[in-house]
Image (cartoon, rainbow, N blue to C red; front, side, top):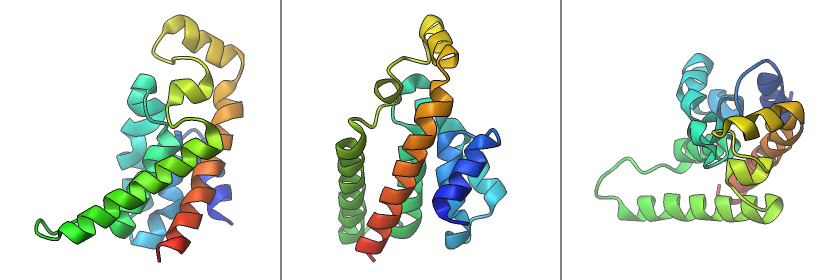
Length: 147
């Protein structure tokens, strides 16, 4: 099963975008899937505020697992990690027009009337899988490129 397939399967089974993306990559970094699901919970729906897309948040956590900064005096590692994050979000914006949940959905899920439109139009079922697939494919590309 590909990472995209795994992430889409997780999303289809009731997990959010962030959980799906992070958990699809968790075994590659020795991260327990249950822990990945728990960690990603709060980032779905743009951290429940319709801000940064959960799929992007999940991908950035994976990039942190691969390139993250963990030594306070290692400014080179920190700079590289930040540059990779900037490159990832830049490419996601180029592919999808934004990294902001409400922009991608066309509605603000924190507004009850707009949340009802999201549900009526099945945008979580239509837009979110596309964002998950885009996030995973771009993540795989970045991971290969910055090896």
